[in-house]
Image 1: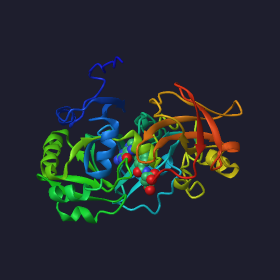
Image 2: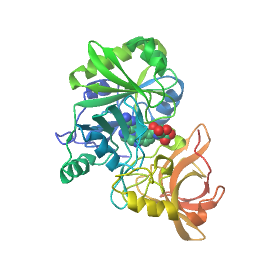
Image 3: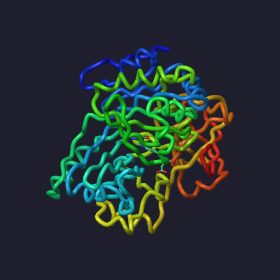
Image 4: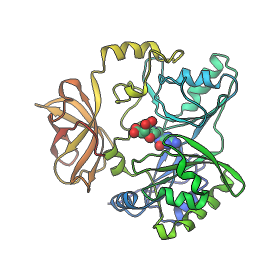
Length: 369
Ligand code: THG
């Protein structure tokens, strides 16, 4: 089949690591926050196997930061999310749904609390900067909002601790899940968090200043030679197995956090000031009428899911698949679907209209990890 190219242009932003990514043989890119995001190096299945066995360096620069700086930074942050931030201290990261006034999801970023008056919102693929800036101005808040020159580099896989210790020292091993520490690389401060878009463990380095990008990339590659370090990227198979949601694919502003299974990250009662609070208090009381579910799909490996695949029961549409992949480890197709409450119980058998053929699908209780 003919694979079209992505035409380079100034609008499609390169990253501080793009030269390294291309030298490592990137085979496919997607566009995320108007920036290049690698999606495949050797093959999606080879990348998957290697991610689960070794360690990879991921250029996730496209996880752009919205920085809040000033006396009202904390107040603004709480206006954006129904997650109660009062217990959050500097040095912590929180996965936070961001909602509009109707309770619709605008983004599902990681919030990084650098100090009481300084935050990074590490965003998924939507132009959140406009929303945040508009609220800051509309409410006349004393806060600066901008996108700084910060590019996350993720180190993921079971050998991530060993690799990171070689470059940053043994102290990195002590960083706890969703916490960060500031460590030195060639005289530069780097925020290093134990987090990342896989369930294989690892870190994210928030690289400040594009100029230090390639020196860091090269140092990690050299230090990890005997660990079989390789360039990698968020892996479709691993993320669907793990149930990590993809904004714009698995949910949009048409969905509430509760529909997305993110109710555990909402404390709508106590999130005083949250812009979608009233709307969410209503939907939280009623409960969602559809929700994201893990779905197993029978048959041979599914093609790529670049549109919703209808989920049917007795010929009637009761949901849709938004992400799917063949899982070598679980010997089935794994998928993320949105399913109506009448059909979301574990074990419910459905029919999915995949583009190649209709297949049997089964609703699962938990994801595959
Ligand atoms: N790291 C950083 N920025 C990001 C992502 C990231 N921005 C874009 C995108 N990923 C945002 N989406 C997610 C989705 C899931 C998680 C993080 C960001 C995640 N979830 C875990 C889970 O659901 O099990 C842990 C959540 C928790 O326990 O707090 O990690 O990956 N910097």
